[in-house]
Length: 201
Length: 305
Image (cartoon, rainbow over all chains, first blue to last red; front, top):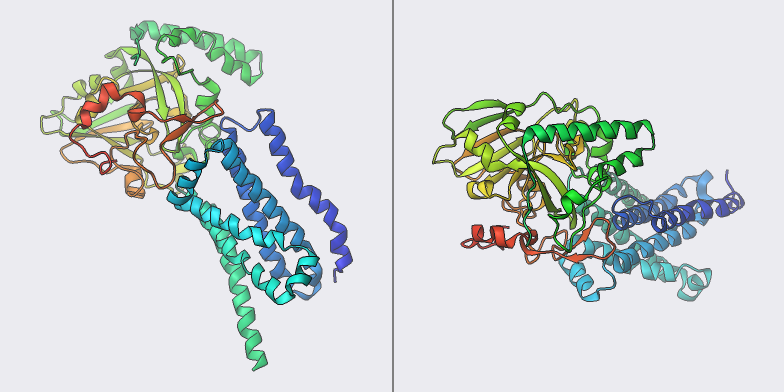
């Protein structure tokens, strides 16, 4: 049985581990060590990291259903906020480095290109999630409403994986794996719900 | 626009020069440090500079040979550079068939002894909205077509890439339907800009760039410039091409560089020149409008993209 204390103690290490890639890529970018097309590389790495973290937050909830791992849920907020951090870096790389704040172009791009539309909506949905991720907010909104808002993580995850799927030109193995994991995690929730209802009846 | 002032070099002299450069490369290798080997390829880029547009700068040998789309060696940009070491580009033959006087198989060396190798500095614009400027060596496709003696009924040319999954690990996975196929209309194939390239920066074509012989059609998106060609077929109907077969709503047969035709995935209005920070405007027909626009005067380019 892992206690809340165990998981809380791992937080500083996790914090550094998850933060580290962004610092490394920033350093490599500035020193010209991100390869031949550094802006593309930076954007890809940041986006992939964000998607993986989103999936990990979903996994944490699933894992917390297993009794000895119940307390793992205390890690969810930190990882979720890191996902938002990487999405913000990913999005600002696109806006600032890739398109130099050419807003007219960017708006057209978001409207015209489905994969960017998916990514952008996913980013928008993450904003209410991130901004209500404090204990104070849970109190203010009430747990029920707060929980409802946080169901947005499902469309966020689905849209983010579609964003990646559509982007890949051929050999969609990697995005399909991510989509598969997301679908399994969602099925687990539906299954849990159905069985709980039966028990109540 | 400045065309390719084409420093014309007889093939023999060219080979000798190549040997010389190779020799100096070998000594550079002895001094270790791989990046110095890259630098050596560019020891005298001035020989190409007179073919350059004033807004263009040559990309480095390292950029051109480590950032490639060549799915036969893997789908990542660095895979062709990393995974093409076992590929054997010699001996090599090209099969000529379809609507020709006599179907035959040419030895590559025989083809090369009948053509004039020239320098051609071209912009290469990838459909993914990045571009490079590359100093190719090669000869006009029209020269090979003359050797092939196509019939009058031949209206299209189809090209096929080699299929060797044991040497090309990307082919072990069905990312696209192998072998890779491309095609041109006969007048596009005969256009003086269209070349078969056998080298770059004065060196034999690196495996990752399509050794030993590849097509270069500078006014079309890069995927039209098929690599490692083993078969050329003359047809009276428009051939199927690999990307068009895979996603016809994204890639057309013509695939002319066109900033005004929208693409569902990438804006084609701008591009990132590899090595530059800010995007630049994409030019109609990749800047070769003067040379090729007449080929399409009766064609609706929004429909035939």
